Amino acid sequence: MTTAFDVNDIPPIDDIADPALAARLRAALDDKTKPLGALGRIEALGARLGGILGTVAPVLVAPQMLVCAADHGLAVRGVSAYPGDVTWQMVENFLSGGAAVSVLARQHGLALTVVDCGVRRDFEPRERLVVRKVARGTADSSSGPAMTAAQCAEAIANGLALVEALPGNAVLLGEMGIGNSSSASMLLARLAGIDIDACTGIGTGLDADGRIRKARDLAHHEALAGFEVATHAAVDHRQGQS
Image: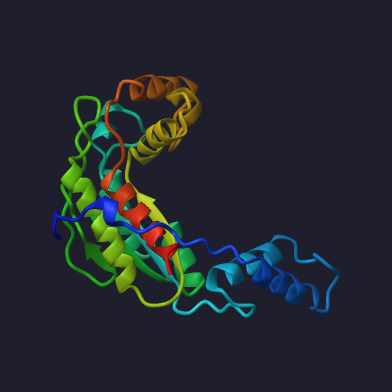
C-alpha cells in the first residue's frame, strides 16, 4: 500500500438527512397492523436503515462483519487487565469460529472478515483473513509517537480500500487490540477537550485502583491511536459516502 496517500484528500461524509423520506418511512411503519409504536426501538432501527439506504423498503444485501485487529505499544504499561498476546489469540479465536462475534455473525448471516492491521504475530493464510499489516504494533506512546504520519495514512488508505472491495450494502464494524480502550480514551480526551480521567474506564476489567493508574499513565502520553483504529475509522467514513 502506498504511503503517498493524503488524508486531506478524503471527501466529507454525505448528509443523508431527508425529511420527506423520514416522513414516508414513519407513515409506512404506522400503516402496519399494530398499535402505533408497538415495536419500540425496532421501528426506530427500521426507519434509520431506510434513511441510510434511501428507501422505504430497506433490504440488507450480503451484510458484512469486518473486524480490524492490531497491537498497541502502550499495552506494556499495564493499562489492560490482559497481556498483549491476547490480541493474536483472539484473532485466532475469531477465525476458528469460537468468539462471540463469530457466533453472532454466523447466527445472523453476516460474512465475517478479520483484518490484521498491525498484530505483532503473523498468521497462517486462511479464508476470511485479510493482512494489511502496517507494522508489528504501534510504538509505546508514553515515550514517543504511536505511529508516524505515513503509517497513519497507510492505515486509513487500507480502510478505504477494504470497504470498497466488500460486497453488499451494509458493513458492521468491530476491532480488537489489547490497549485499544486506552487509545480510545486519549482520542476522546483530545478531540472533545475532556479531562483524560473522565474518559478512562476499566477496559477489560481493571479494578478501581487500576483504572486510576491507567488514567494517570495516559495523561503523560504524547501520541494517540492504533493501526486498527485508523483503519476502522476509514471504513466507517467510507460507509458515510455515497
